[in-house]
Image 1: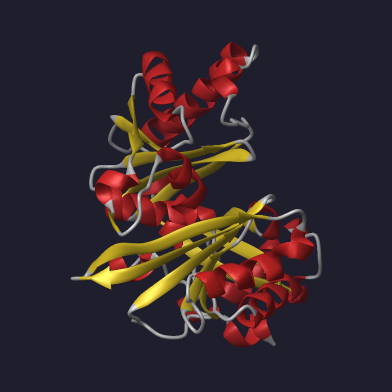
Image 2 (image 1 turned 180 degrees about the vertical axis):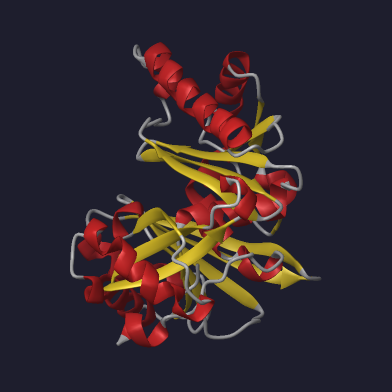
Length: 323
């Protein structure tokens, strides 16, 4: 998904993520056609009201004024809906999708910006399915205005599910299929992709903060998490009829990534390992595990122009979303 795409190439990009308690900015440049992390920084916020001040300071400190920015929406800012594709021409699909999801929206259809991307036909045994992304237009306008007032130029707006897909495409590889998870205290996301296509994406309610393995409830939480993971993999392999997934890759965690991967490996039939960006990404700065978990989404937001074109049919909705 990409709203407000302004140009195809640039020397470097800023990736921006706003979490409940911090703003994260990554600055990634092009080095011989590959991404190179120039800098990465986060700053705490007390509330959403402090975001403009904190982001403006980060932009100034990192000398990013005028840089193109790829912004990642927070989960509460959008909805991702899987529907059967309306039988219309591609040019009419967005309008048809808006009509089809109107009863699932919390506001009037005309007040929502809509984008979409297709699911491979083989995922649902020939049924045409699409993921539809909905965002309230006023929210997009407010975010774009805030970001540009801080000195950046909004190039695209993305969602975590597709940012994770970009991380897989660039640093993991999914030619035969890959399962990828981002486990956080605010909730977890699991993607299963193959050859750049997103087959399955799930938000998992298990909240895994940095000390979860020391929790007295860890065994129960682990059991629920393992069940959710295995169900997702089984669905991909059995219901979608896809080749078996032999590896589950985790976004790096603050300090327990390897231990968590080892525990999950013992419980699953799938091998579990951690993506270590310090080994995979050229960088001017150190990327210890703690920074990787904080910054992985912001780094992933900058990768769009360094990976093969995403196999989506998303069209820009500039006039509708920004009007």
